[in-house]
Length: 151
Image (cartoon, rainbow, N blue to C red):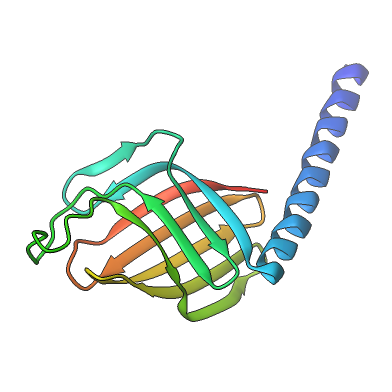
């Protein structure tokens, strides 16, 4: 019994140390605006939740948003002039804001404009490394993504 108690305490301590390391690393990444989020799943308005392959990501590199995300939904404008699929672009960030509404949560809001649309990203980053991304645009259905911060 004592051995199980010691192992349990050590595991809790390791988890706490890992959370603290992630919190510090995330704070540094946000201060430098160097952040990458690997995407694990997406939630669509019309098609429900889907698991995605591990090659999709969202990155913030200084003042540039690198969005390589899948898209499943409807567009309210013809894509004949702009045949781009997915949310795949690298564009300058507009209207960047960052706040900490809870002790373990950082919320980033930013806009990016491409030739085909204007996008609003709301990124929720938890100190555990979990990330939730909500994307709205002028001409497409909203979509959300779940992922993990990659440091």
